Length: 477
Image (cartoon, rainbow, N blue to C red; front, side):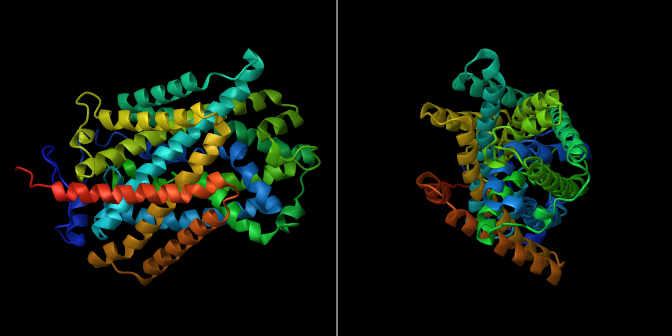
């Protein structure tokens, strides 16, 4: 892989897969701050991209609308699917570490068209997730500020502030960025856990057998509900984008990926069970609540925590924007290294050792996407839904491609395993099924168009690769 910055480059797999991973086992810094992040800070990247404190308020009510008493069970299924992906990703992460690793895993193993598809899918996944949580932050800012200033905050300045601050922190210092994301999530999740811990004492210590028996559940609704639940987990693998900056990355990153999947799954199942229990006997449904945890806190007589949770959710969404900006910038950097994008995106700041141009482009793209919808009269909650629906397709694509590539990479290294091959095959099938559920569950014309928008985007990315490949010329030594 040529690290020069002159000319037009489109990397072709000139070495065998085994040679690629043998070379990659010694991590290249890419001009980033090598070894800056320890295990906890690396985990913070994945946790913040997942934004676990936002799902109890925005995603779990949507899952409940479909799954009812099976909401916790749907999250159990989603946790299983995520762990399948996590197994494949963690196995790859033991072999190599670089910015944009999921793209690298695929590009270094499968034919070029799969690598190109992986690159554009992963980039869209992080950008769309960032735009989605920007909408979520706007939604919570409205909930929090409207009673105070008696009007919704202006959309464009609010979005510009969220995006601008996230871009500045991502550019300024990756270690500061990771630590800030970590403390934001710890604070937000802790507040939620306090409310959930008080809940059993309010209702009495007993099991909600309706939930365990899946009472009144229509099993045909579990597929669409699973799609929504999967959005709670997307981004759990984003620690892999820190391959050039994590300390001992071949050990730290695989652990972070699996730890995030397990911790998030347990948290989401606990929140699902508790919220469904907490709304028993309420005149309003969980699926219609604008801030379910706030309502539960008021019900328990600790309304101050309800307000704090709303503020925490808003700030946690900012942390997710920051995490997505960080991850997308590293994917852009890796794509520039491969010649898919201009070489300027590969350059890093001598002072901060961060990819300034890539960070700026990531932030501008997320801001432009949210502004386009805001100017069309779309609110923050709708942005969260629409961009999230688009992001899911990107993540499902990259997860399936990584699972597909894993057995070939291990075989090239002489590490073929029938168990790994079986898990990889199952993972690919599960990702395809979730994508099918997603397409079939489109409830309106807008959501029904999203798969086609995604396919047009991927086709354009492949066409761009074809043009760059034709213009490619050798790089001077």
